Image 1 (cartoon, chains in turn brown, red):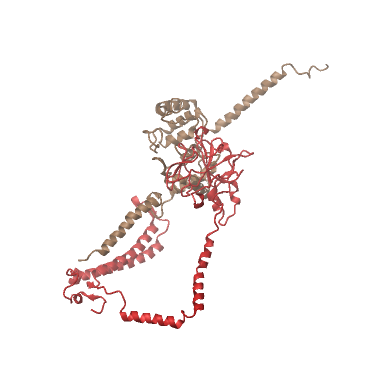
Image 2 (cartoon, rainbow over the protein chains, first blue to last red):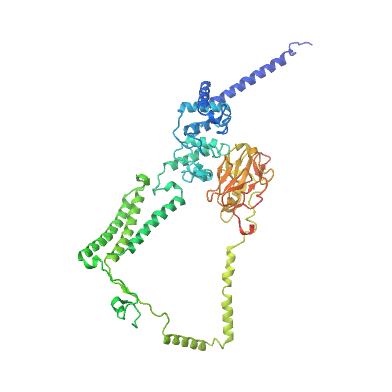
Length: 260
Length: 340
């Protein structure tokens, strides 16, 4: 028993445990801090303001705690992206119960939308509002975007992005006025009847390629003019049956008319 | 009246009374008034002249108008100026030739009414007799009746002649045999995202996610035309719903935690479908509006399709990726003759 100094103190274990616990806690806090710093800054007042707006404008259908009612779906876990999409495109709040919410002039200011989004995001984790770099199409491949658009989007939104009919009066809206942020939000959250296309199945670079293609569609004039809604054979057939065959009939009447 | 060809009105009226009396012919103003005739002549010439100008205009427009010039025409929309002018000049050039020709015929060409009387359709007796005689002579001189060997070999050769036409029908084959009943999906085929080829884990799909997918080994398939047949048959969609929303499936345990795989090919006319309405779990075909309820075993809820959408049984492999449990248990796509 020469060296009591080497012998561990009775409290050593306890101290080590404490140090480890504190280190883990601090470390975890540091990590979560970084994670939160990456996301847009959300202040507690914003969440409070959003809650106030929610209770005034949304709770009638979505429930006082956003749990959903018979008139509207629950919003816990839908994320800020869903709120931003629905409210900035004016689809929400709904003017009247309808099969589908149409795009209209938004009634909330951007600040109010951010507050609402912050409140709903605080209820449960969901897709965040995409950042400017998320929707940047500088490095995107237009041709790949076209292929992805035709595989994943064209079946409902039409090959020219002009939208199309679904069942029972529902429809896929035209993409001609959609902004890149709205497109990413729609793909992430699947508004109304649209299925969602999360980044796990359709990575953000692929989404950017699709956006680049839709922007190309939005910007391209029709070399032939009179696209007739780009609906294909339905409107084109109707037009040629009425206008084209009508003109031929008139010509036949003229050729056969008796001359005085 | 032995001459049966067209005769004019006066000759036709030589008999006692015309069988079908015609109303008196009224002449056109261009027949009676030289001024009107000259006016009509000028109209026709103007149309032909204008047509020539349009043709020249076409060539000028082709050279002069750059293809990147667009103009806006109100309700018709924004369109390419060069296309517009080329179409208008070319169309007007041909149209004016036609209009001029019709105007010419209507106003200026001879305006006579002509009666063309019918005559007996049969040939005169002497012609018929001569033809019959010639045939009989030919029959006798050829020896067709006497020379039995020649006659029979000729008949035999003529009877055999159509056989090649039947034999070449084989080129319409080969018969599909079992090809319509199977796809390249098999036990353990990995499911990858269409176009990007990315393999999928169950956690990649959220509730309400739709993925157009194909088997991973599709790229290795070699057919006469790339892998179009295999791709057309093996295309699937993956959807995920809450397991509690699934009312029925085509087989026990064919989903993976609410992830369902269905053929992408409509059972009515074979259109590829991915119009998925995630709230109703409804898959709508754009061609004829057949609607399938994916939460209820792909049952047809509307439209002309007669059979449910075939479901592909799926599970995960040892690495956690989504794979097929087997091939489809029924043929995909529209019905066919042997399927019953």
